[in-house]
Length: 275
Image (tube, rainbow, N blue to C red; front, side):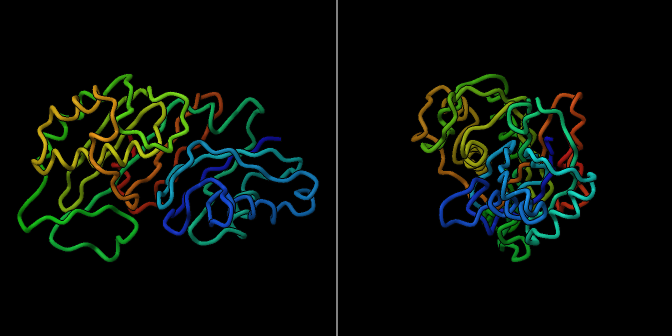
């Protein structure tokens, strides 16, 4: 049978989602925990998880979804409780359910939402170390949020996002569809919420870096449209730090009845996560 899991994790201790040689990764920890819970069955049929989004090193998840196939039958909550008993404190399974064989955590998803959480001011927050991005700002200064929102408008719709794509990106095409970009200001916090059909490697962090250049008055809002049209990564801002990036939500067709992320477990306000 096919089992889907909903995950949350702190990505700061990990070299990203995907299994890598001699690296500590989220996928490796999850597969090790499922294997330990299943027991002997995993020797005959090794566990292999498929994810909705392969997060990078240091990137977190509030609503990650994965699936795997198994011959073992358990109640839904038994999967949650059993797998969690073998996971480190930085990873948790929030829900589990049997899904049809045609369900794919990756290919059935039609929408993904990322949130970037940033705090700014004269001093960084030690309590938010590796949990949020940070920009040093003098006292009584703040970003020009309206200008950033103006710049975001050109990104809505289907575009070639090559200017915001990592050179290591493995996507078959740089053309993606951005549905919404919300920039929410709540000093000393600034949240970027991006919803699209899919995202390129480093795309959100590269966009955030460009937005911050505009919000600090170093570039005008028209610069974003120029970058988009240029399709040249070298012209855009440097990739911003991973600390504040969260894979917040994955959307699937209603027929699969995939649960929503468990918002009670997040320090980010629930109204920021909801779209």
